[in-house]
Structure formats: C-alpha cells, structure tokens
Length: 260
Image 1: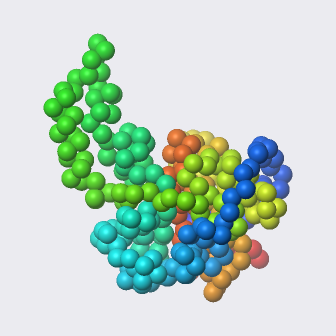
Image 2 (image 1 turned 120 degrees about the horizontal axis):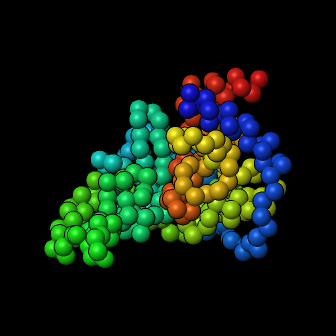
Image 3 (image 1 turned 120 degrees about the vertical axis):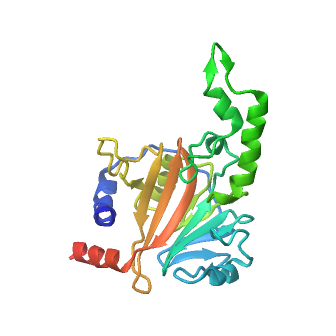
C-alpha cells in the first residue's frame, strides 16, 4: 500500500504544483559547476562518475574513490554519505546532520531515536529547578554514547557543499521553501511535497511545511528502464538528509499502470 501511495502521489504532484503559489524569495545565485554530487534522471553522479545502484559495496568504493570507513553499515564518514542495500536495491544517503548536532543530542534524528546526550537527559529530568541526574552520571551517559556512536547510521562528518538536484541547488542550511523556490525558478521542476506516512490522524499529503518527515519527488524520465525516488528528510525544519533510490520492479509496474 505504501508503494502504491507514493507512486500515485507522484502523478498528482504535477497538478498540485501548477496551482500552488510559493512565497517570493530573493534567491542568491549558486554555481552548480563545482557540486560534487549531482542527481539526475539516471541516478547520482559523484565528481562526474555515475554511482552503481544495485551493485556491491566494492563497486561503490571504486566510484567514490575511497574505502568505506564502516562497511558493516555502508558508511563513508569522510564524505558524509552512506548506502543501505537489500539484494539489488540500494538507498543512497547524503547527510547534512549527524549525532553531534543539537537534534542528534536530543534524540530527534530519524535513525537514532535512542541516542541522547547526558546533558539532554539531565535537562528533561528536573525537579525543583535542579536536575535529578548527577554530573558523574552525565559523564557516564556521554562515555557510553562515544562507544556506541559507530553503530548508528550517521557519518562522523556531514556532507559539505551544494548538491545539484535536477539542475536546482540544495544545501544543508536551506529550508524546504527555499529549496522549492529554486526549483520553481527553473520553470520545469516540480516541488518537493510531503509523503504522509506518519499515523497522526491528519491528512497532510502534498503539503510543503517542511517541519519533520519525508518530502519527495520521482524523476521525470526513465533512464535504462528505471525511475528514481528522491527524498528530503527534515527534522525541526532542518534538512537531515537526502535519500535517492531506484524504484523496484513492482513499483515500476504500478507506476506504468497508473500512467495508462
């Protein structure tokens, strides 16, 4: 059902975008020539080299030009990127936030809800204006965090610089409205809209608030018989990561059926 929903929403997004008015913004000119990562209809390029979706980790290491620092979870810490693969399907992540961020220390990141700094634990355990957590206990929590940090699917260093998504820029300090404003400036790209998968009794499909959750697009044209899903994940209005994955065979069949 989830797969059918996102494919159906992708067809609806174009109609929605045409009638939605985005706020006017004074947009700075961003040179995309130096973008290390480019996302297009055929997937992802790193320094101009196509990344091998559906291939083993060794092929990704060749394309990215370095060994994975944590191959057990597919993380490239120095680059701020990672990949998650199941059989021949790959999800590629570009991280703008990690465990050292305020969101990470507060246990708010999508893949690290159990990670929380000692200071944050102390701050939420207050009584009479004083924390119930001792300074010694705070140090113990933080020491344990340092030991377990490597187990979480977040890089030790975040990605630096701009990402070129279909000819429009995305940077870590941009909110969703700014990202969509750059896309509208091209006059040919659909905006990123909400993928409503949370269970909160609210239908927020196709909204563009950008507070928390997944905002997506599907590439416009097939390349090698494939389409790619591009997801922006936000936490507290901050861009946490970009995720790119190719649609599975069953998703492609559903997509083709819906377009008939």
